Length: 161
Image 1 (cartoon, helix red, strand yellow):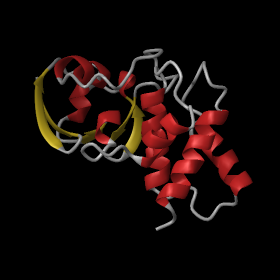
Image 2 (tube, helix red, strand yellow; image 1 turned 180 degrees about the horizontal axis):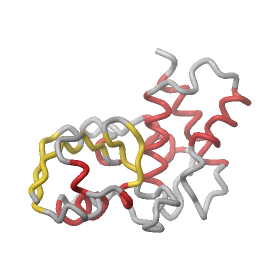
Image 3 (tube, one colour; image 1 turned 90 degrees about the vertical axis):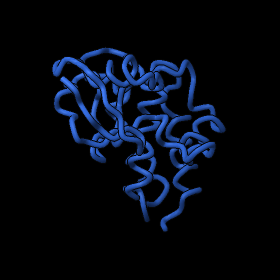
Image 4 (cartoon, helix red, strand yellow; image 1 turned 120 degrees about the horizontal axis):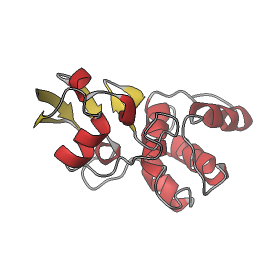
């Protein structure tokens, strides 16, 4: 089956089985290897991407469901050479360790930041909200504190505007 979709703002086509996983199409057919496979069962969030603006686990989405839709991967968060605020903050705060979970966390956190889901919350409430909003992303390295710190730094950088 030929699927046509928009990936990171660019029209793309691929000849794939309709049952192929979106994760495999991104990594193998479109050579966008930033999205990682962790569990392959939709449990860990390493493969999180945006599909029509909503966070999904690419390992459990059939490619045939993506025809005519918009996908944003971790590579699409940056604007040219300028990283998204959360990508910069994850690096600056040490929120990225081995790197398997980082792309999914970055995509989810960017979604939270871009949708202003933390706007106006006091720091303690925002910290708890970040932990809840990123609960679908499992990290085995950092203990989450540095990740939460990075998201809050990015929120401050972006501001409420």
